[in-house]
Length: 99
Image 1 (cartoon, helix red, strand yellow):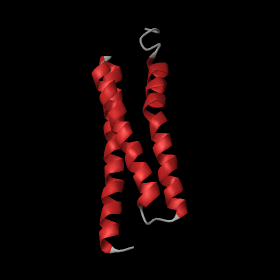
Image 2 (spheres, one colour):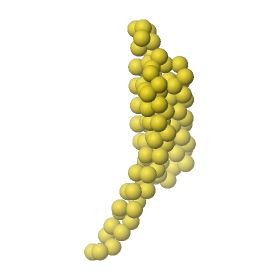
Image 3 (tube, one colour):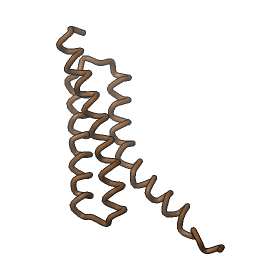
Image 4 (tube, one colour):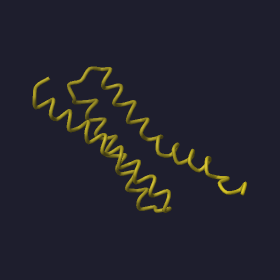
């Protein structure tokens, strides 16, 4: 891999991680505050993550195993914040009911 390709691939992977973090944070705060605007912003952050992952899979000079891992990660990131929110709701649903 050439130095410019390494730099671009590294920056794209960093962008993917930042977009995933933004998606999770915006989703959590959006659900907590019941804010449609924040949930839309979360969807936009995930859209950026998905677009970046697609570009990496198509254009990055990586092996097939790495490209598969990137694609699988992008799909998994879509479900992590909603599943975490569901688990937190389920865990705290009866909080204070036994006092």
